[in-house]
Amino acid sequence: MLIEIISATAILGIAVLFLNPGNLSMPDSMQSMLILGIIVAFLTFAAYIFREKSSDERESLHILSAGRISYLVGVGTLIGGIIMQALRHEIDPWLVIALCAMVFSKLISRIYSHFKM
View 1 (cartoon, rainbow, N blue to C red):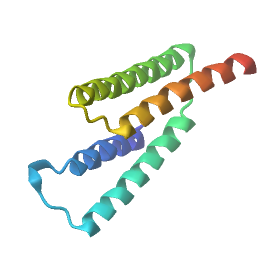
View 2 (spheres, helix red, strand yellow):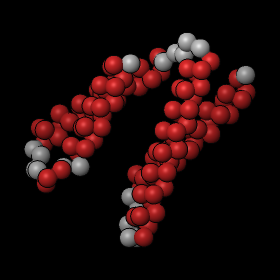
View 3 (cartoon, helix red, strand yellow):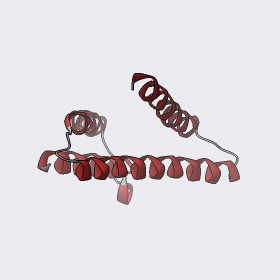
């Protein structure tokens, strides 16, 4: 659990640094280190998420609830970003790609789970 918290905090911290707070100019070497850092932090976080096991039904429900909430927050944030950019007439294709990837992966996993059980 501690490693999950540390890796999630590292992902959030590095993501904020990519926003360049305070208009600091980042040299290419610093940006390369941030890219490497966010990749390592994400892979560590993903490894612990996939390894996550529940000990009872209640804990399993908590894990499922956290997954649903984070999915809805992610989709809602992407839709909000698409709406804001549509009002400015400059939609970033990565927002649409990320939204489609999230919705498509959710659909495929539901279909897979339905036929597997």
